Length: 287
Image (cartoon, rainbow, N blue to C red; front, side, top):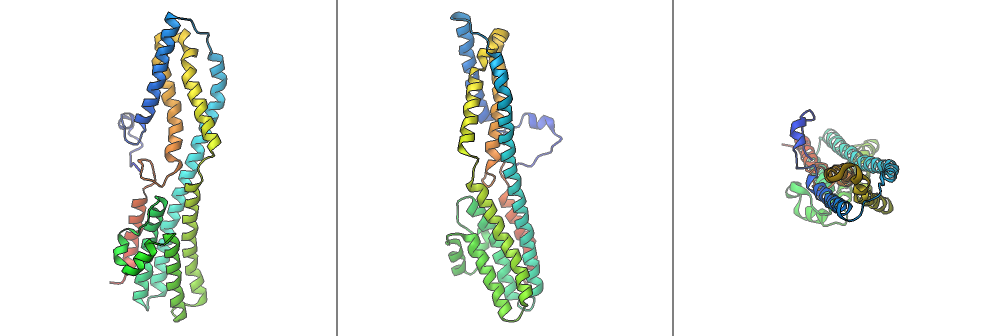
């Protein structure tokens, strides 16, 4: 994710990184070349009949489709951000409860807190189709780290390992059944959060909707010069490119934020979230 100052218009106007200007620019250029062909044909071969009324009629539903596309993608982005906010909060709560209730066994506290820190890194890796526990793997027992990292679902395996540690503390009388249930709630929320993130990742927008929108955009932008050439002449070329840049840009924004767990410029900063959790939880480790 790109950090920026929202009041700096001048800097943003010329920004390239994160703006998808290259991708959109290439497509707008293709539309511009199509406009050049239309203007030449209109001038030297046959005068086109204006289709501006048709484009005006299509423009309204096309705009609604684009708005829905962007809103649906942003809803996914914002839900993902809230889920990772919950992972941060529940990781802190789990470490806080562990440090307070298992104070009599600092070794147990250290094991649970380290597993807690590893959970966020495992979630990040899983959402990026990788396996790994981040830098925390070096602080865990080597056999345990290898087993957790190599499991079919590392976040779930870590959650199970934390539950076993909590149950062991309860069996030894360090906490009561009620306290165990309270701490387990934190673990359950963490598992629910990664499950919700996986739902977002594995359920893209319906294919039929995306295909129809892109076909409509291609037809609209590709035939737009025919609607403009009688009025604008050679000015049709830059006007077509500007309109195409705006419309295609809106669609590309939806594509960019639809799956927010990757490493693109506009994706969520999962690395930063994991580092924050690690830094917040380290004070709970025994000296």
